[in-house]
Image 1 (cartoon, rainbow, N blue to C red):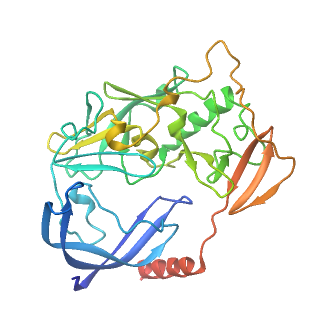
Image 2 (image 1 turned 90 degrees about the vertical axis):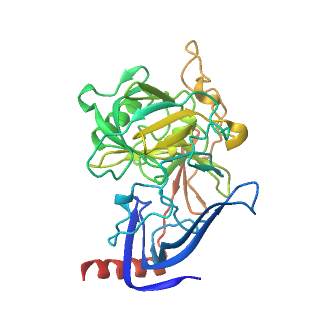
Length: 356
C-alpha cells in the first residue's frame, strides 16, 4: 500500500509552450515496485522495495486517458522535481522499440538476444558532461532531397527522448525545414496555403501526401533515414484517419528527437559506455512499423504530384472536434483543442503554488 511521506511535493511538466503541454503536481509516496516478464506473469524480473513514486493530485493539459503514469528512464539528475529521489530502476543499459499501439522495453540488455533488432546496432556517443541529464548526441546534418538544410546550423546538440511525441527542431533548423517544403512541395495543400498551414499545430490532411522527401539525419558517423510515412502521424477520427505533420519547432531549445523518429528504429540506451544505438526494428517482435515509404512511391520519371484520387468537399463542414477545409481536392483538417474547465482550474492552482 502507498505510504505517505507527508513532507515533500513535486511539479513536473512536458511539451514546452505547445498545444501538447501537460503538467502534474502532487506528493511523494513510498511503494514496493515489481516488474514481471512479458510471457510469464509469475516470474518477477525486478523487485524494489520502498520506491519513491510521484502521486499525482492535479493534472494540467491533454493527458491521454489511457496513461496511468510515466516510467522514467532518464539519468538520476532528472529525478529532482524539485525534491531529488533515487530512480526505481537505475540500470546501465536498456533498449526499446514501439509502434503506434505498443512496444517493448528491455532492461539490462541491448535487445539483440530478445530479437528486437533486425540488423546491426550503430552506436552514437553521448555528449559528455559533468552531470548528465538527457541523452544528448551531436547532430552533424539534416538533409532533404540530398541537400543539407544549412551548413551554418551544424553541428549542434540533439536530445534522444522517448517521452516526447514529436520531432522538435531547433527554431533555425525548423525554419530551414519549412523553407525547403515551401520551395519544392508547394503543390501539397497546406504547405503554401494562405490562412491555414500544416505547419500549425493541429492542422492535418485527410490523406497521406505522396512524393515528399526522406529526412536524412547524421549523428557522428551514423546516417539514419526517416521516410514521410513516419514524420506524418496518422490519427483516428470519427470520419476517418487524418495525417498530421509530426515535426514542430523547439523554439530556442535544442532539437528533441522524439517518437516521430524513434518509432522507426530499435533504440539502445547504453549508460555504461555513454552511447545510444540504432538498428532496424524486428517487426515480428515489436509489431509492424511499416517502412514501405523508404522507397518513394513516385519515381523520378513521374510528375511529383500524386496520382491518387483525393476526396473532394465543396464547402466548409463541421466534424467531430474540428473543422474541415476543402483545398485543391485534398482536405485540410483543423483539430480543435478545447480545455476542460476543471483542467483550467487545476492549471490556475498549479501556477498559484509555483508563485507562492
